[in-house]
Length: 390
Image 1 (cartoon, one colour):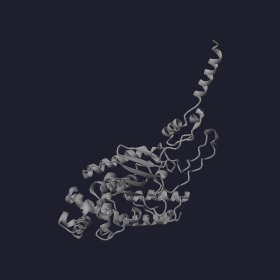
Image 2: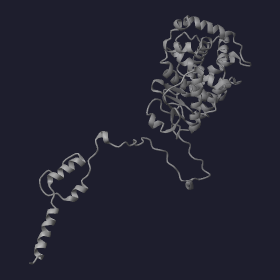
Image 3: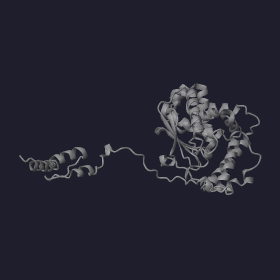
Image 4: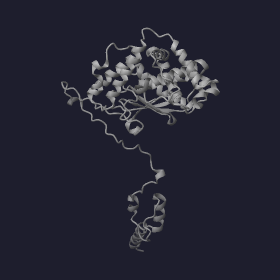
């Protein structure tokens, strides 16, 4: 029997059968893998087409997460071999910082603390020392919790600006968005600076108080507690609240905290902030932190202390008037120096755009402000320096 032709015929039939695919089966497999049907006509399907068939996009809920593309362009880097040792590098342009907008874009770098995250812009001049700043925030938090006998649960965020805020907030050094558990602060000097440490401690007080004591019943109590806790943290590096208010009392310039005072930033209304701080200090030292904690969210002076705000203010003002001043603090000179420094600040900042001459003037004025708040009163007028005209 000649089997050769028969084997060849069987081989041809077998190869032909192996290259045909049931279209219905192909469609079912395609749907299970890609979520849609293909080749629904009943015919032959090239097996290679199933391998190269493009996979459709995943559903929205199944999409893999990817970080968004940054919207800001990092500054170009220059190779070391292209640098000319005789040519000074171009200074980084002064970019006014964003307040409460585009936070993730404006503050792209982070440092994780144990209970908070510090956000900052590594390209903003001068460079922030983020690790030192994070350590400082941790110190302030521990101080405040011990001072007030409370513990803040959960986490919060800090956005540190290396430059002044953009208009109309140039005169603000910080702002707390306490309900949202974050605050922003200008950090444009060394963290060892008493005024720099104070403003960070001030803003952290707002966040801590809101999330532990509740929403404040008045700006007086909110700002007063922040001033009191902030100055307590820096210690004797700045004029004490008692000395400040005694000096303003003796100069006849101590504000009445029961009035509707403006609190538009320390540069604009420093004496209002400090007077509020003195009053809160008086309440806590006279009646304790527990009673103040009940007053903070309610404003019920009579219910908590058995006295009206006016009566408590009168008792505080009497105490401030007889407080002995630390020599050689001169009340008239202190009021004059603060008034003039505020005027010079506002004159400079009203049209501030970061021009190098403006920045230089701001640096000198900032040093003057720090000296005044430390009790080192100037023996010359600011006009002699021309600070407010630059």
